[in-house]
Every structure is written in C-alpha cells, then in structure tokens.
Image (cartoon, rainbow, N blue to C red):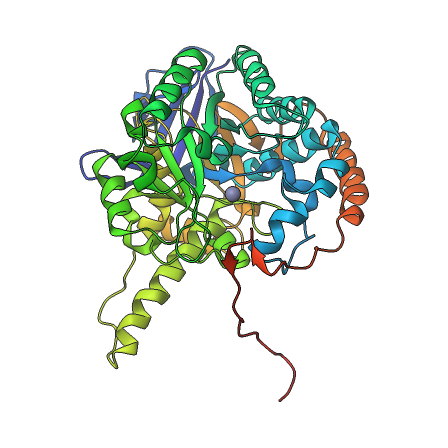
Length: 478
Ligand SMILES: [Zn+2]
C-alpha cells in the first residue's frame, strides 16, 4: 500500500499528557501502512518514503474517526419500521427472539443488512464498532453476519451472543464460533456478548471466570459486552456488581462494556472505576425506546457512546455525541433551575462530547491506538470538508465537528490507512454500491411488510416488569 501524507490540515491530535485534544492549526500527517508514523507542522519535515501519495487537506479538519461501542447491524434493513416503538414492544416484535423476524430473514438478508449498516457508519466517519451480534437463531445467519463484518471494511469487535435456541444448540454455536474466528481478519476481532450466556455462567461460584478464561485463551477474545438496564427493568445477571464483584470477570483482563446501563448503583459506578470498565451510552436509543438514562451523566469518566439499532434513528456518531452533550447540559441546568437559581456555568464542554465519541471508545477497548491522532496510532481518520453552509466560518474545529457537522461533510475516511471514502464517495466496497443498494432495498421491501404491526403489549414485560402510563404529547389545538 502506498504511503500517504495528509498535508496542511487542521489536525485534532490527542495530547497524552493532559488527555485532551490538541489542535494543530496547520499540520501534516504521514501514514505508512496502517499507522500514523509522523506528524509535523511542515510537511517537508516528514520522513516520507519515495512515491508517497500527497493529499492536500488545507482548510479542512482532520479528526480521529469515531468509535461506536454498541450496535446490532443485522437489523439495518428494518429502517423506519419503528419510528414510535417502545422497548417492551421491540423484543417480541423485531428482535432475535421474534419468530416473525427469524422467518423473514434469509442468511443473505442478514448479510446485506449488516453490510449496509457498516457502510452507513463509514460514510459518516465511524470506523470502529463493538457489534453485539445477536443474529443467533441459525448457523447460516450467524455465519453471514460475521462475513458482513469482515466485508464491511470497518474495524469490528464482533461480540457474538451465544444463547440457547430451539433449533441451534449452544454447543453448535461454540463449534461454529471456533471455526469462523480461525479465519483471522486483522480488522474483525472476536468477542462475546453475555446476554444469553450470563444466566448459565454467572453463578457467583467462580466457574464463570474459569469458563471465560478458557474461552479467551482458545478464541483469543478481545472484548466482552452485554446489555444492562437495572432500575424498574426486570433484573438480569449483567450489572457491573454482578459481573465483577460477584463473578470476578474483570480478572480476565478483558475490556468489558455494559451497554445502556441507565440505572447504575453506587456500587456499579465504583466497580467501573476500580477496574477501568466502561458503559456504552446510546443516547438516541435510550430516548427513543424509553430505556431511560438516569446515571450516564455521573460516569462520563468511564463512558463511551454507541448507536444500538441503526434502523430506528441516526447511525452516525456525530448525532449521538451532539444529543448526549445537550441532554447532559439540560439535565444539569434543570437541577439548578428547579432550585430557583440561574445556571452560572455550562455543565459539559464540547470537547468532552468529542472525546466520548472517539478516545473513550478506544479506552473502553483498552486500545491506545484507536480514537486518537498520535504517532503510532492506527490510521483511522476522517477529513471534514468544512466548506459547506453549515460549517463555513469555523474557527474552533472541535465545535465545528460536534455542533455543526453531519455525515455529508465527511470528505475522506481511512481505515488502517486504506480509503473507505474519498472525495465524498464511498470507495473500495466489497461489491458495487448499485448492486448492494438494490439487494438491500429488495430485502427491506420484502421484510418490512412481514413485520408491519407490533404485537400488543402483554400485561407485564417477561411476566415481571410492571407498566405505567406515559404522558403523551398532543399537537392538536386544545
Ligand atoms: Zn442493544
């Protein structure tokens, strides 16, 4: 692969000493193979190999690409099917446990749906994903989801959710997982999601730890992930307290990401800090479905951001970072206002939102080379054009990205130093976009009518969770 220089851009580099963004107003980046190997104010000072390609990015913003730490890509093809869905409808309607969903998707559908999801993200500068892969109802859909992660061109921690299924036993799932992860892809890293496994291995007797250690050694696992809700939601086995204090899974040394985690206890927060583990806040999802997010604003130091279900809302991280920033501001302002006082400070800085969408994702995965621009980091980069009517006139590049940019402003995207988007066009796709597009649309048109109507809510969620009335908005004149 030809070395590259991104020449004379405004570079959002990471200062390791202060853990903050250091803006280099005019700097050039040398990329050799998959890494950033030098950053200099003057491009002629870069030790560039002969035949290095030079890309002029003067006047543009060079940013680390974004890290989406929670997503289920197989569902992308449902896009716009659930604009007003609530979480308690989701499970029996469109999730991996919906019989109608299992019947509607062919393995090829899972493939094209997942592939398009990764491409949506890449188009908006998202290059790293923690995939909570719960496409686990048959061997074929399991394999096709993995194949899409490999072909998608992004960096994926593929955390497969092994779960007891009627026609696809846990033993079969392990056997297939063993074989598929042997076909090593440098960009798709094996992990596990513990939603399905949790109830059988997290018994507080030490066997869960031994089990995960054995699997880590055998499969070279790189991450663990799981949903966690708490609060009024029916309790599972996946709180940080349960997973770590009672089952010691942090002793594996693996990164552990708790997705959503909207009702953390004091003990949960202490455990996250003590063991340097992370929650993945998915702001738009938690607003949309009603998970709630009562404690995320208290744990920014051990938090990163994710999307969750790309079919119900934005699949880019700019939207998530912006929404989360303003939600935290609103929540904290409201506390002061409710006390009858006027806010005397802004509760969250725009740079913190930027770091949550970039560096914190790398931290969550224990990767110092992801989500940052430093010498030695992965060459996973985004170039914002900055010349569109929404960004024009920027002087603070972090504010320009977090408060004003959208995926249409992303001019270039690189993963491992390879082009994924260039001059506003997706490039190096595993198949031509026109072909991919028509397969995706065909699947969407066929699958969505089969799931057109959500089933009615039962009396209780899973026989346990009690429902309450929700105050609903009206746009009719009263
Ligand atoms: Zn999820």
